[in-house]
Length: 154
Image (cartoon, rainbow, N blue to C red):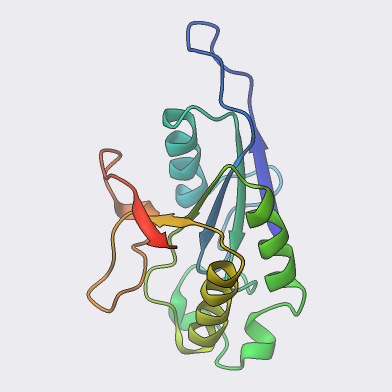
């Protein structure tokens, strides 16, 4: 339901910040335990630029698909029942939480709204790389590394 990447800092860099960055996307695609996809690679670069040495990646949906149109229409098939509690637990412990779902497919709209509301209710501040025209947090994979973070939730 989530993956983690950790690395040793470059000795020429300042000491890394404690903790980890949690990025929350829409749904998993090609990344796994020993393989990074474009999104995970980009999230690692941002995490390094922010001064951290650990990235944890989660997603609103848990169904693996490279295209949003491939995500099942049935929410129960698209989202593992333990996903939200796991993401909330990770978010409580993260030093920085970045949401980058893009506009989710139909089955993931309600789970995304519930997750974002649950984080707000718990006082978890979330950030994003800007918003889509529909108000969703922009997806990180197609943005320039110079894209600034902004507060998404409280």
